[in-house]
Amino acid sequence: MEAYIKAIEVYLPQQTLENQELAERFPDWSAKKVFEKVGITRRHIAAFDETAGDMAAKSCSLLFESGEIAKSDIGFLILCTQSPDYFLPTTACILQDRLGLSTKCGAFDINLGCSGYIYGLAVSKGLIGAGCASNILLVTSETYSKYIADDDKSNLSIFGDAACATLISTNGLYKVANFAFGTDGSGASKLIVKKGASREPVLPRIHSALIPGSETNPMSKPPFLEMDGPAVFNFTLASVPKLIEQTLIANAVTFDSVDMFIFHQANSLMLSTLKKVCKIPDDKFFVSMEDVGNTVSSTIPICLSRFQKMHGISGKTILLCGFGVGFSWGGCILQ
Amino acid sequence: MINLDTFTEKFSALFDLSPSESVEPNTKFTTLSDWGSLTLIMTIALLQTEFEVNFTNEDITGCESVQDLFKKAIASSGAE
Image 1 (cartoon, one colour):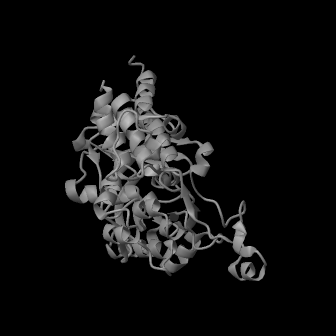
Image 2: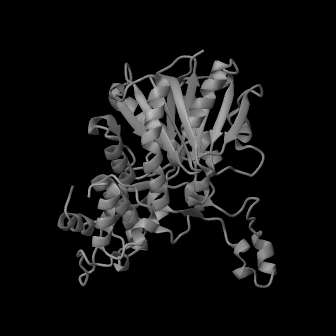
Image 3: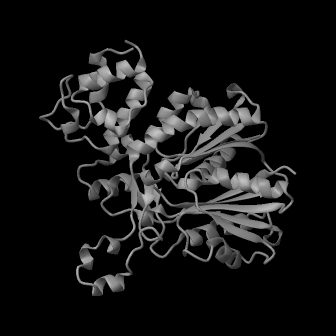
């Protein structure tokens, strides 16, 4: 049984962070300079009390409102997020209940970032191929904004919040063909939120207030995103060209037969450098991130949704490529 | 392959220089006021597109001057 992407809906939080506001917060950066460096003018930011689970629910509601699928027909729910509502239980389980899906529906989270959509597609294809489900809701939802320190102008400039609900079925717009994957955990520390989980727990604030010296105790500091931009950039340059080659081989298609390359939208500098390194013609390289920023696992479905609306899809061969935090990477062909 | 003058010009364009600063072949670029993670990333990108070399942070910050960086890139690209 083949798997197809049938529909995609995008949810963007209402609040935005514009370049002008960044320039006011960081006087040595102008709005023009921010755009020149990262290619982003706007990011959508989840409200204080809006979680990735909330955004996931909203994107799924948009999908159900479109009439593409009834809730009762969903056989599996997969949520890709690194911003779960709780350590446990699985946020996908909570989402099943919130959405009113059948209790016969399977549900689980995938903890991946920039490569997450590709891995989610692969798992969905496997579930459909194995006869475990005919209709799968693959949701990507991320609130990296909640991990970023107020004085971290680089990451504040790059990351935005978003959620996408993708319906994967036994028929649809794009057939999900074959994949290539990769992992290099030696790069784990290059894009990381260290604190709060088992390796570096954080003291509850109420306890830290009672313990003398806790204000200088590193365990009492909140968990923040740390990114070694140059190291991530070098990893990307080293891994993505090979990933494209491996994806083409896995699908027995040639480079020239690909109609469009849709990469994870990390930032404009990385995209323009990758385009040159991979020798992709301008008219075959899809970029759409200026008004949303780097939305982690949602960048690819946002682009796919926009590409479909702009160009239609029939007869197109599309190569998707996700890469980043982990380090983790994956590619696939849609036909 | 570009020459040192052209490379210096392209490298200089990566920076927002203060009025008292300039980028010359003998400039110790890590002391420029705009030197940081973003200019480091842009340097990595420049080296990749002009010389097809992947330099690490240490490869770049270990260079004394723009000219050093240029020579290292030439040597790594095998163009010498």
